[in-house]
Image (tube, rainbow, N blue to C red; front, top):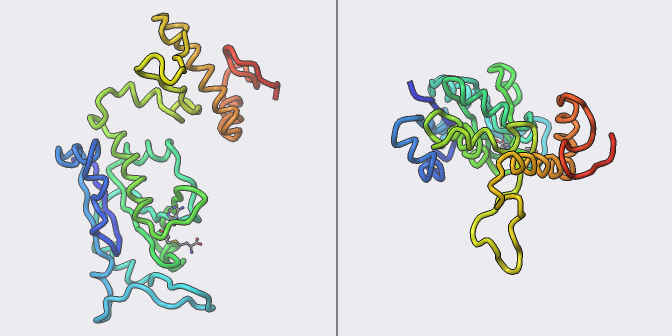
Length: 245
Ligand code: SAH
């Protein structure tokens, strides 16, 4: 059974979109995952096919009706956790992505307007997931991003599984910087150690750079990394000096 993505949206024509190209698209054609879109409007109750209504309590914008979205969820079928893409959700991270990819699939609800009626989220015990602290005009771009992240974790999608292990977040660190040809470009050279062929020194240099970058850019990740690391010092393991924490 291949991994099953079910997307509930009022814009099914946005799918597969970018997911039909490159790695995800090839995997889709090869049947490594399946994508079903469900048009929430098909479950509307009136002849105008309306899915939204004015908010109780007043205010701007419209709210997606719980009865219509609920009927769409029932009609959609699919498998795996029911996820609502929402700026009020828990921030998506690689750990959650990996867990979703390891399961049977995911059912995604894309909001539009001001979002979904709260009672639907309670009644269906929906998991709310956010892409970041910014507001999109709809859940579809977030759904595409989440599915892209999950699909590349499925067995057989990314050629070398080892390229996944090295990546940002996999060890609680941002990744080290990359260099390729030309060896000199606009007067800039490649770090000498990468040309040395000395695998142990290269590994140590990359770890030091990953630690340095994480400490500078993401104090939140760095604190967690330090707490989880044997030795528990606030300085990078190799090379680069840092303040004690
Ligand atoms: N009124 C809402 C924003 C609604 S944006 C608020 O202030 O919280 C419309 C839809 O876009 C949402 O229902 C959600 O599905 C999607 N969306 C917007 N920002 C998002 C984000 N950061 N992550 C995931 N989905 C998002």
